[in-house]
Length: 235
Image (cartoon, rainbow, N blue to C red; front, side, top):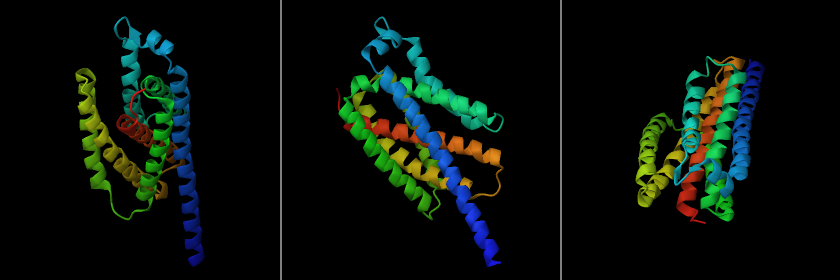
């Protein structure tokens, strides 16, 4: 009896490790794709050619800025109906579009600020991920509240794109640090539940690993941008 229990625990532990390896492979893969594209496209020549039309922002910029929102929703809402191969294609496309969208930060902030903020983000993200994985407290209600705040922030951010208030942007960034670190802990707890559950098929687990990688990637990027707005200064 004890031997059977030990074997089951061993299988569960191995399955959990494999699941999180996949999750973080997707997340780091997306960060790598976005980082390479953002750095390559983050030049005045590229931005002026493709994102500026005359004295105004080009339609292409708005497509690049908002297309990832639609792709992200599609991936998360329709993953059960889509093949893993097509989901992976959409995931790569999402990462590439995010890279193009992030390219403008290289024109606004200096490289030292971007690099230091990235490492601060990585540390904060890792700490909250560990907290979410190890805590025994149920974070469901906390996570639901934070998602409501996130939706409000998203709407406020769109409005501020047209208003252009620096003070409002700073307030949103400060709120974002709290929201995205909290959601990191919440998401890790949810992913742990998926990883340890015997109710999913192998195909479902593979798809959910991709979804998990996407969610963590989105949280990391948003936390990074929030911190950059607060501490990055201007180039």
